[in-house]
Length: 139
Length: 386
Image (cartoon, rainbow over all chains, first blue to last red; front, side):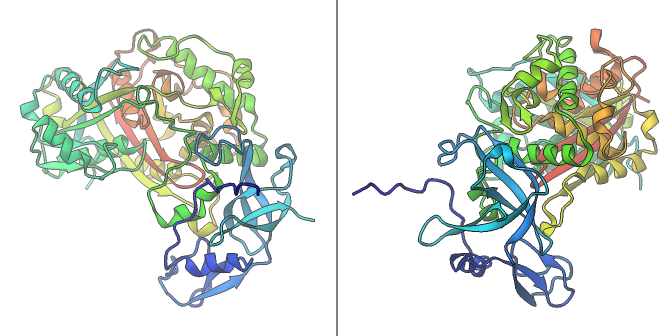
């Protein structure tokens, strides 16, 4: 039997504030938050709206589409898990819902990445408990 | 109440070491304090305020350092906002002195980053367990990568080139060649920068600050007292500090903390850009300098690429910048904000020999701490010998 390769990159420290968001990712659903008082959107998830401090929060399901806002191809990172996967692309993706999120771009050659490029979410189940939202060129 | 000219830098000392495997961080700090007090003509018994950070993980390392030095100051500040901390400390010390909280405040820094083989920029972000970390660390952020994303966006929006960024590194190296204690003194060309390997695109190895050991200290006291001391006072005219972050996912990453801290410092100092004879700009990476100059208002947003070309930032140029060689060539022990204030002080006193800026009377110092493409701090000082 092939030896199970251990996932060695950092895993999120999930807390009570963030658990609904991470649980949604396990279901392969991506959400941002919207304040029910003032309508401000926010990512990453938090209990209170930063604009009016209301805790009346709506979870808005994202279509999982966006554009590359900026990116970098990382050629040097000595941290375990990443040093074995160089080069990799780290990027901010601006979701159609209007927030930027830090992520990795996958399923494409680093030299083909361009700012403004349309991308779509791919859900990477890295452990039984954790799914990461990464992005690939839109198909 | 204005802080302008209430306090002054009376002593400054840069530890000459760039590699000190035989010394502890605290020894480097103690030697730096000794040097700065000698420069001011004061003794350790005169010190009743202390500012430092970067010690240990507990957040209260300043207490351990007071123990090491056997100090019991009336004012302590361990504001920890990254490499800009010591620029902010200088402002806080000035405010504390103006408010009567202390009389002689030492700002001190030391680090053995190089001899401890600490990968400052490419070690992978450790994270302090903050809520934001869980949304970032799984994707492999590095310090250099965060700045690189700002550079990439700047290139996209304004056509800024790697050649233009390289010009900054070339200028810093020229300055380092005139600084006997700089770590790298051999001149480089734009071609050398472009030929160095990419660390995190679009930044090359020579777009990145070096890693060294080092330390330094400043002595801050009232303007009145400074006038009676050994060296010509360097007055603190204006200060500003703030932070920028991902802003709920709505951030414009080309607008950095310097826009706000710079505006505050200029307003409070009552001077304009035309008055600035020297700019000491934290150069963790070449893009840091370009973005900071734009955000401080020395040129318009998007014009930084052209602005840094043609020798403008040379010691004999229109806006001399980082005349010690900066973090790109002289020293970078991890948080180099204090060296910005030290070199500005030396320039305003006319102590810089071959790299001395002519008629240097007003200097701007800007420290950036943290990572530009995620969250960072900015602290600005405007200093003058008049």
